[in-house]
Length: 232
Image (cartoon, rainbow, N blue to C red; front, side, top):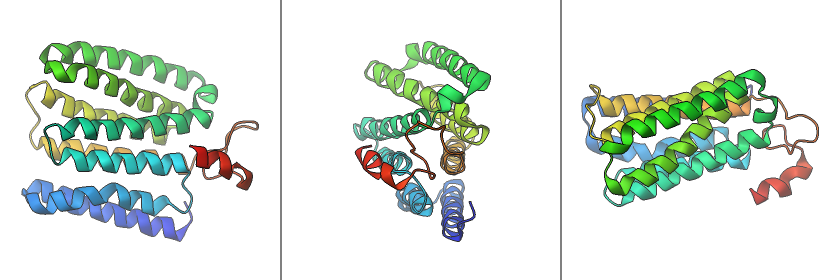
């Protein structure tokens, strides 16, 4: 990423993340709550000069999720819906970019491995989840595993980002299941989430152009693809 606008924007995102994480560690609830809804818009703005619409959509849908989770209660499911939309955008972006078709052995291992991770995680969590959360958590976590798998097929950087996103939301799921939590659990959840989003987004921007004949959805898309991109 040689564009100085993107470098400056990403630096701003990282500084905002530092402010948020510092507020979390220090227990500054108001500062934390005011900063959280700004995190993903800052990331989207940073990469807007080169990002495809699906990538911007994933980040902004995550902003909806971040914001709704601040309110708790019934808004939690709305927030989960926001993150589900983000995963649909990520999966579509990576699949259209040829990640699964060209991922080779790494892609096959990622798809199989994360399918097993999802099955094991849901099997363990299911008895301890509230009845009203079981189906939503199972469906959402399947999309989450889909992002992790397709991002790994796309590349190691995006794959690490998808894995961190999955780890972050798995920590949230253990809280929903009333399992014992790590010390500074909120910090652990958010630092893995913010790092995961950063790696997913920056990794997607630096992916090579898709093979000939594949619809372009990344920064290398041609001008004539703009109508197709608009439809996404």
